[in-house]
Image (cartoon, rainbow, N blue to C red; front, side, top):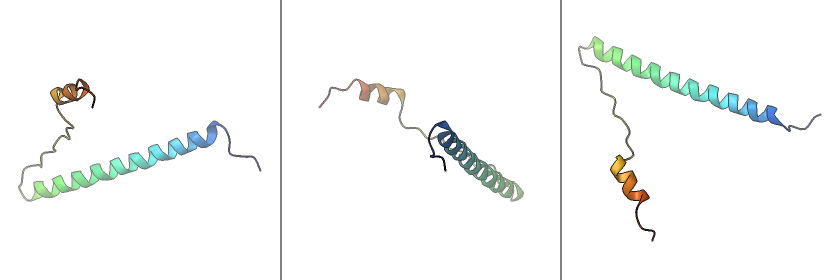
Length: 69
């Protein structure tokens, strides 16, 4: 039996992670599409997606230029 050394296990793990992530993204997209189709059937407008913002550029610059301490 050969030991699991080298690039192959890492590449296999990375490929599996990409597949799982893409499946989750696809599932979320299909759920959102189904919700919008249901809203459209009821005559409601599509729901707006909110952007996730971690802060404005001004906030990020203020944190970066803050004195240590």
